[in-house]
Amino acid sequence: MSIELQQLTTKGAVLEERMETRQAEYKTDIARLAADVARRDADVARRDADAARRDAETAAETAKRYADYKTEIGRLAEDAAKRETRLVITVAGMLALAVAILGTLISFQN
Image 1 (tube, rainbow, N blue to C red):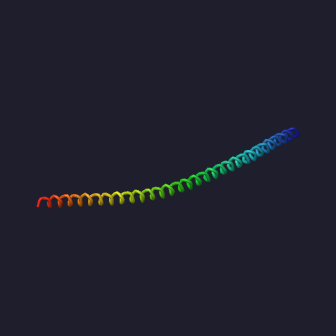
Image 2 (spheres, one colour):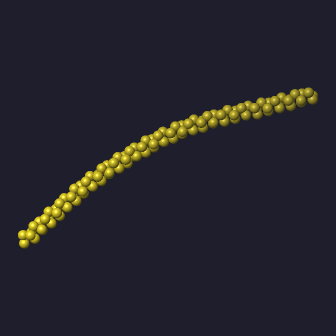
Image 3 (spheres, rainbow, N blue to C red):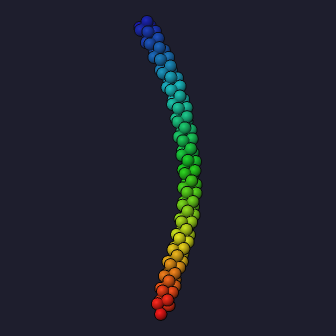
């Protein structure tokens, strides 16, 4: 019985050593996973910050373009008003010239 007890004790010691080895491996794996998760979290935070920066830049560019378009539309409206005024003056001048020519022709006829 002593031999059996010694064999069981040896087996128990081997199993305990194997269990401690596995626990150490698990702790190492858990630490490695925690480091991977922390690295991935840092990467995600960096990507989020980059995306927020790009969004802010895009919003600023859009606001600038909108202001430029608004200015350009105002300029186009002003140019259109000037053209319309010139056109009215030209038509009025042509009408006055036609009336003057007709008036002259009528006065020569009498």
